[in-house]
Length: 111
Image (cartoon, rainbow, N blue to C red; front, side, top):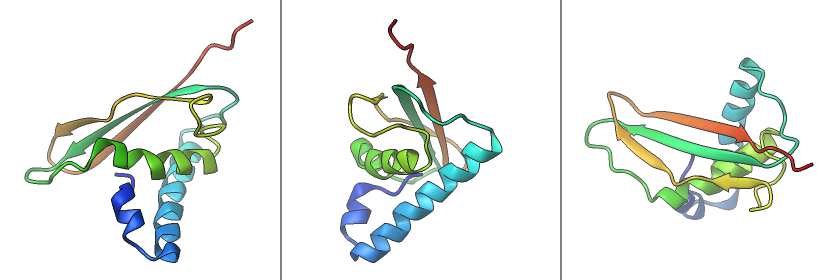
């Protein structure tokens, strides 16, 4: 699960930077492993977080900051502004273990 914004803000700036860097490293690894092409245009982003029993869900908007910054750093997004990203509402589900599913879809470029 991406580092929630409230956890980033509660840390010393250097520790927060390390947490964000760890999020980016995970995205770099998966992007390389699955040969995900670098972003060249706007992308839709969907996030599904599967929570184990008794784990509380964080605020949905708190997950976007670190995730979008990491995706830009990994080249999966051009920029995290609204011109380049269409973020769907975060979805939560229950399961056996904490799992995060990130889906990105390229938008058609107008001709």
